[in-house]
Amino acid sequence: MPDDSRPATRKLAYETKLSHIGRPPKKGAKAQVNMPVIRASTVTFPDVAMLKAARERRFDQWGSYGIHGLATHHALEDIVAEIEGGDRCAIQGSGLAAIVVAMMAYLKAGDHCLVPDSVYGPCRNLCDTLLKGFGVETTYYDPLVNEAGMAALIRPNTKVVYTESPGSHSFEVQDVPGIARAAHARGAKVLMDNTWGIRTFQPFTHGVDLSIQALTKYVVGHSDVLLGSVTVKAADWPAVKIAQGTLGQFASPDDCWLALRGARTMAVRMKRQEQSAMEVARWLETRPEVLHVLHPALPSHPQHALWKRDFTGACSLFGVVFHKRYSMAQVDTLIDNLALFGIGASWGGFESLALPTTGNITRTATSDDLGGPTMRLHIGLEEPADLIADLEGAMAALGG
Ligand SMILES: Cc1ncc(COP(=O)(O)O)c(C=O)c1O
Image (cartoon, rainbow, N blue to C red):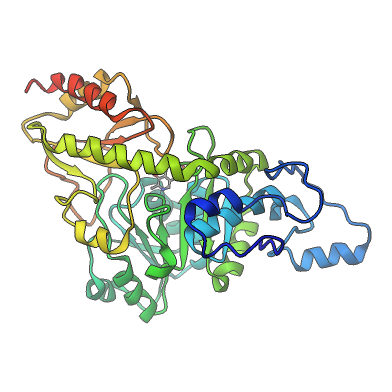
């Protein structure tokens, strides 16, 4: 929701925006720097005319009921819309809820959607269960498809082309602009899970229509809140808000407040985590046990050139493929031996995590063989030298 009392922020550096957007209006007396938690189901009005006016503008400002979001939600929506470069943002109760809202905004019985084979697992589950039951057909495509290849996959009833770049287990970088050109030429909407690319991939300059974020990750940044968002340009705003309202989706204002706190420090956290992850990834590349490090910012990554073209940086999530001579059981033991890495599925927090990935990924259109047993690392705010020493010690499990 635009705040006219603050200067236009579009031209400011991203770090400056994170300090200034979504704060209480500058006009008038100000009791606090941060937006307070506004908790309300009921919104009351001095007269019926004002209630009716609030109903009319429920997509734009405070509505007539808490489900439409109140000031704490709107503050977070403003900040995420700026980070993503969109016009409007709708906050959801989790990243997965954001995926559901975005899909339901543009799919109905008889429609077809295209989803990359590398997609986040629960999105595949949505397609294979609920959407299928509602009469929506999904085709999984090779995430490395080019523009012509995508054009060939689109059918007259294809309404959604979903993207996620890079995939959060196999780390293929997609040609999102090419895919978007093919989709738009045939009237389909382009959805993207841009969680990995937050701050470094501008979805709307690369052809995306609906950008999904799991704010749970780097925006929250402390592994204690689930939240998601769908950000759009103005033309797609009504469809997203109608889907959200129809599905009864709502995020707690307390959680939004925690995410606002996280957003204030996200720039410094992410810069540090990006650098630390590169240091750990480069070290892993030198190890004889390691076949590939799946990190798009490494020149050895097969889509490094594409990443350089479209991204301005990286986050701190990447994969490690060990040589085939090791078993997945040995890699599991390596992970068990780590002292500083938690064993867990999420990412984006201040703490490092390791996750065995081989055997946990479903692929139906392309091979799931990455060349050997694989683990995923999330690098937190620890000193990289300590993390490297931890990994080096744990590698004894592989026996050289
Ligand atoms: C790539 C990706 N997208 C979306 C999500 C879903 O986010 P949430 O956990 O907030 O539902 C996740 C969670 O792990 C994820 O890794």
